[in-house]
Length: 107
Image (cartoon, rainbow, N blue to C red; front, side, top):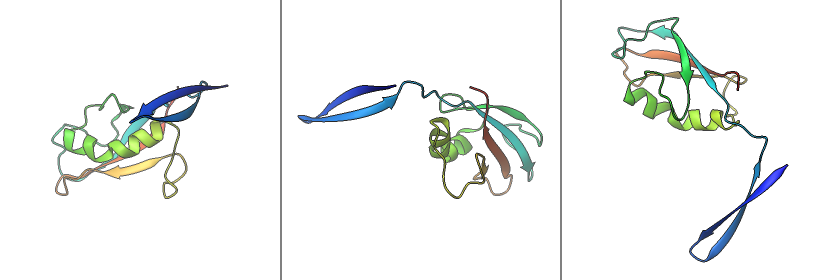
C-alpha cells in the first residue's frame, strides 16, 4: 500500500509516493583487510552494524567517504557495479587502508 506525501517548494506542489511496507535495511559490516594499522582500532575479521545513523566506530574520514553508498543500500537501492547485494569499500587513508564489506542484515 502506498501513502502520499505532499511537499510544497516555492508554491509548487510535488507528490511523492512512499511504500508503507518499505523499511530501512539494516547493514552489516566486516573488515576484510587492513594494510598497516587502523587509527580507529579496527582489525581484520571485526564485524559490526552500520547505518546512516550509526558509524559503527569508523573514523569520520572513512564514514564520510562511504555515506552516499550507505544511504543507497539502507533504503533498498544498489549500484549496478556492486557485486550482488554487497558493497566493498576502502578507507581513504592509503598508508593504513582498511577494506570493508557491507551487506544487508536482518531488518
